[in-house]
Length: 173
Image (cartoon, rainbow, N blue to C red; front, side, top):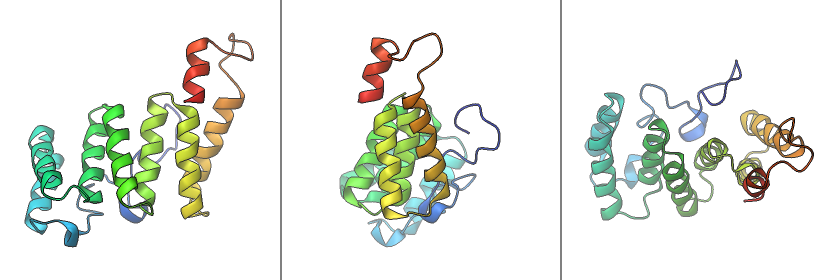
């Protein structure tokens, strides 16, 4: 879960809003876009679910080299980076997925979650607003957008209305 608030759902989600819990990779992959077919992505899912991230990343990078426009492969790379706490790489991978498939709602949503972990609140807000352009009824994106608006409009106590220079920079990135 992201942050410390109770009641939050799974921090990432797969295609069509399905939480990527134990089988997060194969819950959303469209295997028709995978050059090596289902066996390859199934192997990635198995490795990832077993915590063998390095091996899964090698397979995904091989997949991306063979098919650089495979949004699902980029997305899955982002999921692994996020699970490892590497939010910058996760953001970049989700951005690649959403650039390839601009209607990939969950890539936009997870990009927003990764950006939030980096403290990039204005960019986070933009990502959630894009989700809402694609799906105006996405209650998770509405909640995250509202949370970012709150963070932007109310800097941490003791910082005054302007916050520190670092906070101002992060909020405007």
